[in-house]
Amino acid sequence: MAEQPARKAPRATEALVVRTERITPHMVRVVLGGPGLDGFDADTFTDHYVKLLFAPEGVSYPEPFDMERIRAEYPREQWPTTRTYTVRAWDPVHRELTLDFVVHGDEGLAGPWAARAQVGETVRFLGPGGGYAPDPAADWHLLVGDESALPAIGVALERLPAGALVHAFIEVEDASDEQKFATEAGIEVTWLHRAGRPAGAALVEAVRALDFPAGDVHAFVHGEAGFVKELRRHLRMERGVERERLSISGYWRLGKTDEAWRAIKREWNEQVEREQEPPQAA
Image: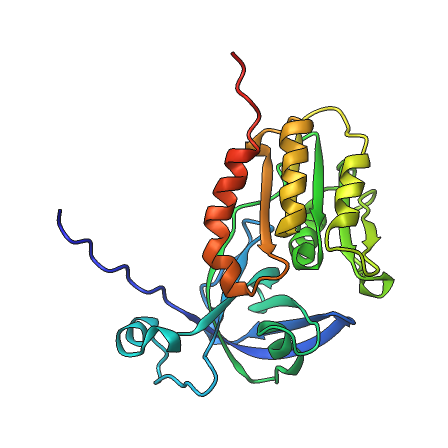
């Protein structure tokens, strides 16, 4: 068998921090700009995301920044660490990219960075990627998530037309973490307060108690992997929602670092799919 060529490292986009804002006690908004965003585009999906690149502590890279060179010349443990964040907004006219970060003090990597980000600071990232946008042909929409999914749900809500039938459930710690969205008439959010309960418990209860409208549903369910797994089982096996009508994934896993979760996420998802597929009709 012929040896497969090494996969080429993706090109990184370079941007500058132009402003920051703490929009709730646990969420910081960082707006990026600069000439490096020429040619960037994130208008197709409502869950567009980018992968931010963070150099390990004490490691610096030669300019111009080149992922191919870094992978060739640096040991793997000195490659940039990635963190994935949803594109909250993209303004092609002013060439500004908005990202929202969940911040819990010094916990994690990207959150603390966002909390102290300075105007003029250089940011590098890969992407964008994405795959979901509300299907305008659906009879109704189900949007479910915790803080990690809040930016993507916000974009989806703001893209839906007036009068769209939507059931949106977002779980946050308390009322201070709720946000306002620029939605059309008749589109509202049900905010659920965790108040110290396990992540996603209130979301599972709300979806299970929902009187599902008739017709075709297009669903978006993202957040902590434990509750996502439970809701996937409910939607597929108890409600009979077709797999193709679900955008569903665990953004994070309670008790796992981002690296540890990403290392097992694919296998975990495949196992969940095997366990939760309804039996085929004879």
